[in-house]
Length: 103
Image 1 (tube, rainbow, N blue to C red):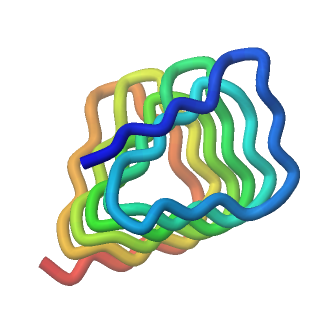
Image 2: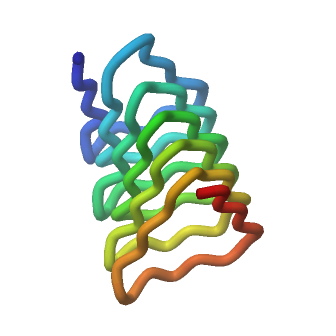
């Protein structure tokens, strides 16, 4: 599985897609991201729709989250509509929006 890293100093305005692999966001993406897995690192931010089997947010996200497995880290800030099969959140998470976890 390929791992694509969007570095701290990189800003992307547009959609990002990986056929199979993980996209790791340390910078900023405004647009939709589609991949096998998406990781938004602490200090990273995304605004748009994230679609993946697994999504981990440790930074900031605004928009839509659509996944099988959602993990929210301690410092994450999420304002989103969430559609997930499973979700776990560490203490300290800030989340607002509509959440649907189907189990």
